[in-house]
Length: 523
Image (cartoon, rainbow, N blue to C red):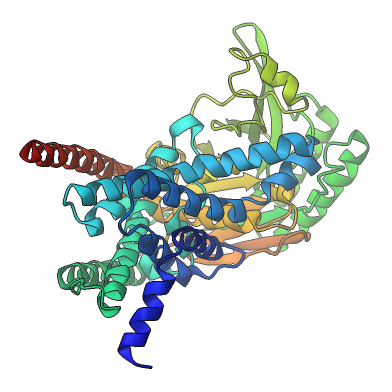
């Protein structure tokens, strides 16, 4: 094919901006589990970048929003399974909630492309503005309106261990920045090749090469380095009971649930074990109140001579009012009940109704949603030779919680969850992929017990040592080395993301200044 005809075909394709934005959204979605084509993340934004050429600011926002909407409609399809099948809410409520969440997350994509285009109009290069703005807006959505840091671009690389080791420096944001930068550089190369009178991005490509080399050098060095912790290893067993969500809370099924967990625990303890972990709400009763069922767990701990950590609802009086908590208890090998940990970051419209005091009518629209209160302290739990930081379900997606627990003395992280809500969808795999980063960021092993999977043992480098299949009774056993509580991320937290946020603000201000100057010269 002649170069001229190739250029003509490329030019014809570039006239479809909306379709290109959607194509980017589809490629982004395919980079996450369960499709899991993680390499697509490194080229997914190229169609979007092509569509942004020569656009107005409004068009740039719309195209970024379209890309994000396409991505999150595909990524979050399982929301409807949760809301309708298990939440018992009508489709008339489910679909608007699903689309509203997808649109909310897409808004940040739109803002990223808007800022990047605004920067270009102020003669600030795209290769700088888009990666920095993307990270800044990812960071913003991680805490704004309770936060939802789900399916960030960096999360798609959770199995590429040499690459994700920099998470102990920058969190997942460092990987995201590298992905966006790669997309921009490859886009610039494509434009140069297509004969669009665009020079080859030699300096940007060199910068990208240096960053990649440094990232991989650091990653392999961490993977091959010696573990700093001198604590003795801990033998752990994770019990996946696979209790059907439809019968999980039935009083008639309580005894059978306990039978399943006792049987699997005894099987796991045959070779000796130090810590047994049951999933979130594995004990479907108030452990504080149900003496007979509670005694079964105490007797089991004495029998296997191990600590047993398990999920159970709890209640307490706060200011004279009875409050309910999503909690976990620890029973020691002597049968004594140890400390209790409470879920601190609740799921909006799942465990509580946001703004119900200010907007009472909201509660009437979503009858049947739980009414839990958040825990108040990130206090590690004593599990014998070490201390555990408790992440209940959804909390595993928030890096600041894991960081707080480890800084408070936790040397292992325990994520208990009940992902039965998601059914046989991609959600359990997406949820699990995010948890891997908590181990790397804090250099602390993470063990994960899930009612229907995925249960797993993840070491401090993000290596998945054991992993269950979903919707099967299963036991994961292995040894973990408690962490040393030492990483740069533990010290500085999300400072790199904050820095990107400040740079983004600087881009906006500088671009505005330059635009005003240009207008003054025209006058």
